[in-house]
Amino acid sequence: MDKKESARKGQEKEQENKVEESHIEGRNAVLEAFRSGKTIDKVYLLDGCQDGPVRSIYREAKKQGSIIHFLTRERLDEMSETGKHQGVIAISAAYRYAEVADILENARKKGEDPFLFVLDGIEDPHNLGAIIRTANLAGAHGVIIPKNRAVGLTATVARASAGALNYTPVAKVTNLAREIEELKKQGIWFVCADMNGTPMYDLNLRGPIGLVIGSEGSGASRLVREKCDMTAAIPMKGDIDSLNASVAAGVLAWEVMRQRIRGV
Image 1 (cartoon, rainbow, N blue to C red):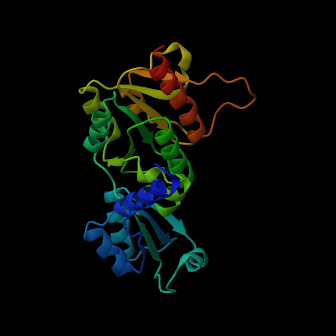
Image 2: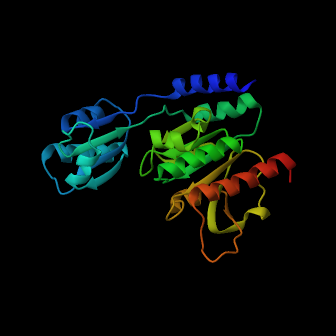
Image 3: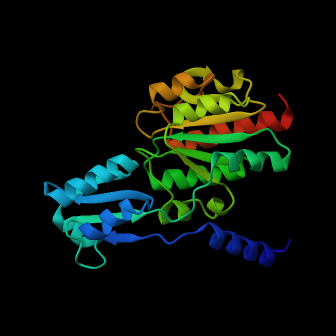
């Protein structure tokens, strides 16, 4: 396939997966977006505002698991595209979410053991985009993210993925720990990145596997970590004690890929 044909197919795939990212402003508009079932990734609320409509939006955002930020009026004014935000701005998803079954079907079609990325609490869109790019290049069949306390598929994530989001399905689930339990029943083993884990070179990372990467600050939650079969530490010799989440994902993913290719 030449470069022009590859670019054309990439553009077609992008249009297939892309949905309109809405920048929704105003109390009624945001509340109706929630009530209509629209996926809202982030909500920005005027700090200190406690009136009825804002409280209703806050409850809907908590129920859906949207990331909530409280900002000053000056900051909301800077973000506003209409000048009529009424103390509320919401950002909806820019790309379609897949189902976990789609990811497993992706592996089946390729005749490969499933290789999944499971991300627990990644809130930085640049990190999420970089991890999706890494997942694609490492041969992973898809990425699973939680509904709560995590960034969704925004336009910034898409740009940071450098096109990988068009090829790597991303599923959003309500409960990561429960999803891991269900996938374990299907024969998938899970390894969680953890500074206190077993050195990654001493682990068998072949076969059906899910690579669990925790948040930028505190790592994977205790419950998610306990559901995993193994914990993996990246050997380090420097003076600081941790890697950026996307870098850690890349290092561990390449060890998984190395073992899958070499069989050792």
